Length: 218
Image 1 (cartoon, helix red, strand yellow):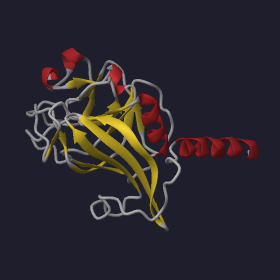
Image 2: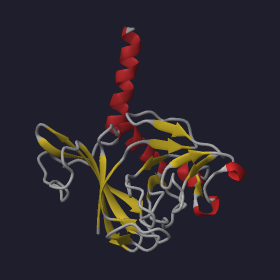
Image 3: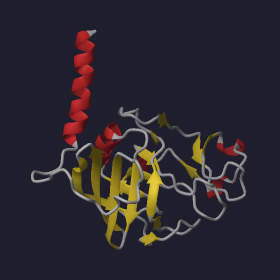
């Protein structure tokens, strides 16, 4: 049992160490989102730098204040840049503060504190504005899905090797957008999601815990 505990602790330490910020980072900083994230202790900051490019910084809050955990991670956002609000069919990344409720991917669970769903060919994200399950993950054979698969997204694609659901349009209001994720980049703009290098994404997923949020600004 002692050996198992040691191995478990070592794994957690490795994940945390991989995300340590560059030398010179210090505690007690006041990040731009500080007054917007409530009691969140983990925040992923995404700030646009022009077009579909953005810079990602990762922060953790402790008793001493906000501490940068990783900084300057290159990220891609929507091909239309950023927007004040999500809109169905418009490829812009919405600005605001969004929950990160659970993770998924075609690859096995890399570990971490979030629930993880390994997806296959029958996993869909319902993007049909007229469906009662709009903006949720569904599992069905394409021919048997009770929603319009042409308006939806099959989740077995390379960009979803690893992904974290972004809590955009949690009210599931038709027309206000669906299928916003923090996912593996293919090197180009997204349809409104946030994407980074897969290896770094895995490190962040391993670090994330329930209650974490993503804060996005231009």
